[in-house]
Length: 266
Image 1 (cartoon, rainbow, N blue to C red):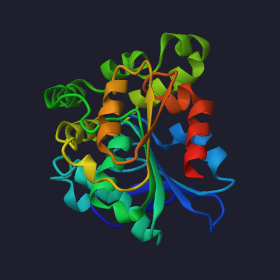
Image 2: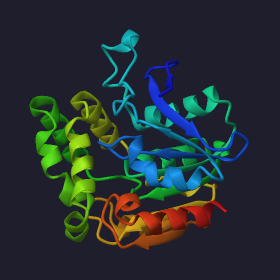
Image 3: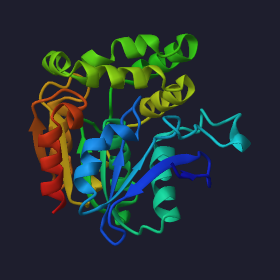
Image 4: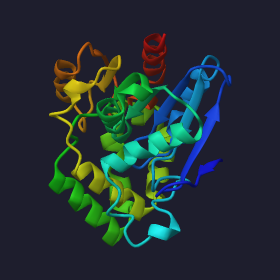
């Protein structure tokens, strides 16, 4: 897997699809890797250049370069996560791209829409919010994984990510994602928790001018349909789709999610 070494955090990525096609960037959620997009990447790569990356501190992406090891955890902010995407686009000489992010990746997309809208052809924000949860809860979770590792977070993930019905009919899929979370580097996970603790774009998303699709899960306990409606009321012209799924709707409602994404990108 190629790794972008330039900048504060080395970022691992994949780029597939026709070289001259429009680029679609796919951004993963907290505690997952770019593999969470396998189904969407396979469907899109026939017609688009698909750029996936591991968010810093996740998968094959490191939290920081060796030269900034003493300060890298504090440097993981929403600005930094959005800046990682811009670094990738610049390094790959991609002037503009479609962007689709889920949960933390969706919040990264909102940041791009606010601060670097000229780089976006369109924006898809899935199972996310302009402010996810509370600062206190994220800081508490960061401290928990730093002290005790990932087991407690992983043990409760299935109930946050999927409906009981999906967990019952696709236990292998759920278990694989939970085990990936269990092996997520605690330092990277904690740093991104703290980035989420400080992330609040509720007063800024009205500036987003890129064509925007908001996707929610009807049964999502993390980023709710109310969060989606908050964003739709403030982002000019935003469209919305609510799927029969919980938090990782691109996996639980794979076909419906991919269909909404492809229809919007046209």
